[in-house]
Length: 148
Image 1: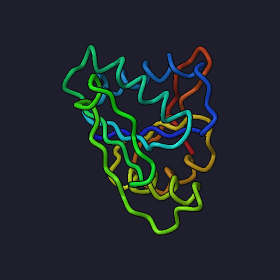
Image 2: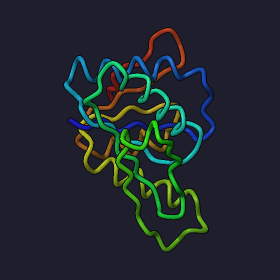
Image 3: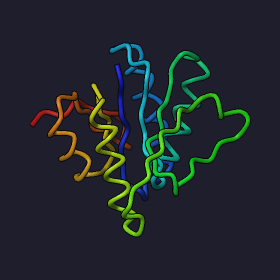
Image 4: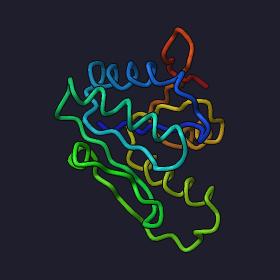
């Protein structure tokens, strides 16, 4: 199973503990082995950080990073084996929101589960797929299943 994580570019660290909880629960409850994120904005950085924390306990999980060839995903020697970077060459490089939404659409196309944080746009995109949708919170309740 594949779970994609999406959220606003200006997310704050307050969501990090709930991201860790969400990723851990998706592994334990649904057998998710692969996570997908895009490489745009603060939420992506936080999702990457949460994934690395969970990977210490679940070393067999994988993460695909969907990005453009012009938006390099930062890697260190400690993390280079943790992520599979999938880069696309998009012609419209001047429009960052076009690039981000295109990468998100690609991730959504192979997702069984989608976790969305504070983004109506990503929520609306996810509703067009077959994936189960969860809304990730920054409150006491880490996440909840989305029902239309």
